[in-house]
Image 1 (spheres, helix red, strand yellow):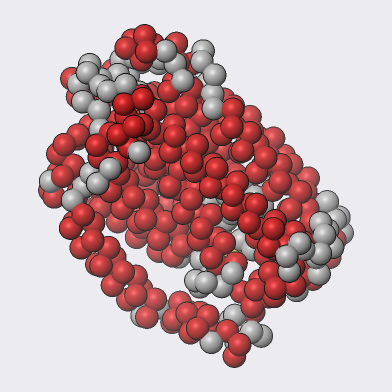
Image 2 (image 1 turned 30 degrees about the vertical axis):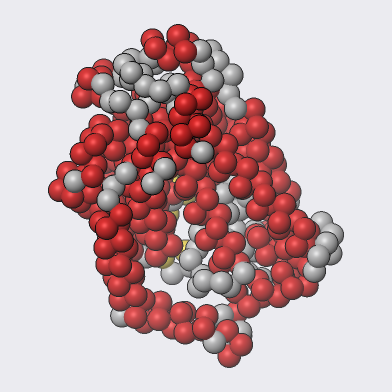
Length: 413
């Protein structure tokens, strides 16, 4: 396996994570301009597509065709400010915040489960703080990635063991998954599991452990579908979509119709007709409107942009000055990739409806701000990866004897 070969030698510094200090030289360096431009482009594109997908519903429901546009614009500006601010903060400071963040997000998930959650679409996934709605499941993904990066970097080679390197990570992820399932939010639970397996694989955990846990997870997931009536009915409706296109499969059926009517080049921006029939087209199914208005070419271009985003995140991981940065960058890149892939698969009816947003594009403040926070961390890692060899040597978390960036990249290739 290639990825574990890039592991740096972990020095005594990682044994005392609370001694983390900012890398001042890294903060002054430049970020990955391509990564930053990609995120900004996605955010801007999202504002345009939210307006195109929501104008009809906003007019009917609120009497203002720009209702959702105004809110998404505010969210977008806040997200870009968040990304810029986080990119200026040394990511090593997250060492001190790992467990407080994990506990805080867990507490928010518990509040959703015990009755404080705001219901929508049959699930209590939001907490209302005045006019602001917070979705803890979105925060849980980033919090879990940060904790996994912290734990995997600290345990080093012990990650290959079952009791120290594998089981604790699966237990913490399992707790978060159960809290998501209780809302219920099956899609977020699946994303958390895939994120955990991805980061364990990257860290060098034994393949047998991952395969065994994957089989167990698949069995439990099948049971969660089969023995929950609404999930099982939705699954059967997805299997026989033509027979349920007027009830349970109405949304995915209309979504597929959107892609089909778009053809190769699409009907043109703002000229889509499925906004009249597809419920909540500006949220989880915004990809369907993209397919109708921009066609196959537009969807392919969007996939290419997401691929570029993930590739630059992996590049930052390979160039990170320490294991913590590498695991963080890999995990956050995987988070973007998994969410985009699942959302597009749902919109194309390849998999049943999951209720996951399209990163940086779908309408919603919680998703956009959390993704912007994650992108800011990626940018900060790329900022420090671009520093000089001397600045890396001065970094409190830099290994005492680690291969050069060129050697790491040549080994990975």
